[in-house]
Image 1 (cartoon, rainbow, N blue to C red):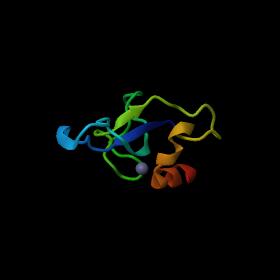
Image 2: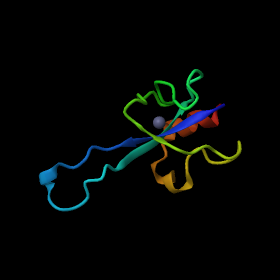
Image 3: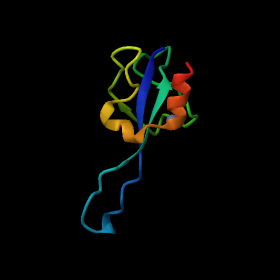
Image 4: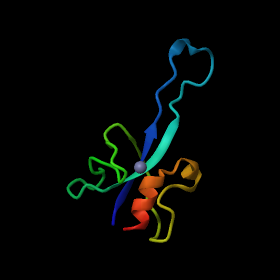
Length: 89
Ligand SMILES: [Zn+2]
C-alpha cells in the first residue's frame, strides 16, 4: 500500500523570544494513506487520525516492503500510533 510521510511541525518561537532558533521544530513524523485520486497527495487524515493539511510532506518512500516507513534520520520523531497502524497493515 502506498503511503505518504508527513512532518508535524511545532509552532515558531515568537520574534521577541530572544536570539536563537526560529526554525519550526518537528513534533512528530506521521504516515497517511496516499490519495487514490492524486498520487502525490495524502488522504485527509493520518493513520493516527490527525489532519494532514497542516503537515509538511516528506519526500520519502520506503525502498522496499521491509524498509522503515520513515527516513532513518527521523526515527526519533516516529509517531507510535502511525507505526503500529502500519505494522498491522
Ligand atoms: Zn501519527
